[in-house]
Length: 235
Image (tube, rainbow, N blue to C red):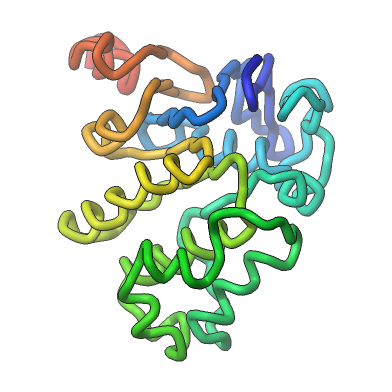
């Protein structure tokens, strides 16, 4: 049984339909990547899974429970944490205070705490008393990931974590993903950078215009297939 899945998931913003019957599944201790161009519906899918957008109850199931209609705080308390696009740190708080916010909605013992987050991202230990916004973009992204990990989630949703960062920084951030997985989390990674996504994922879903257009293991998907699923045939 999948740890998390969507079934015939549709989503609207007012009259605009953003998702059309999306089916994905995430197994225990698995990393899946969702790739697609801007506007493909990737962020809407993440927002639907974590409860920011409410849906039909049965459209999203987690650990055997229908959660599609539940509010975001309840979903987070069950063990689904989100690293949002754009990082969303609290500017008035220090690095450490930003990290500690991750424990508020869900207090469970597990691998992740301040000590292990600082081991994952040593630069944050050095900067723990700095304001979160006094950091570089890459360091802010590390804080956002660390904050989500502090709830010891079973599922970690990562929305465009490489956006706007230099390649060398992206490499550092992506180095953390196998360690996060090894500590017991399953991950959904939303990414425009196809090569980056393929390098960490067990399986990949490609989206275009609110629909899944391709899925498979990285080894089974040719560059042409991905190109067609990403942009549409004829591009």
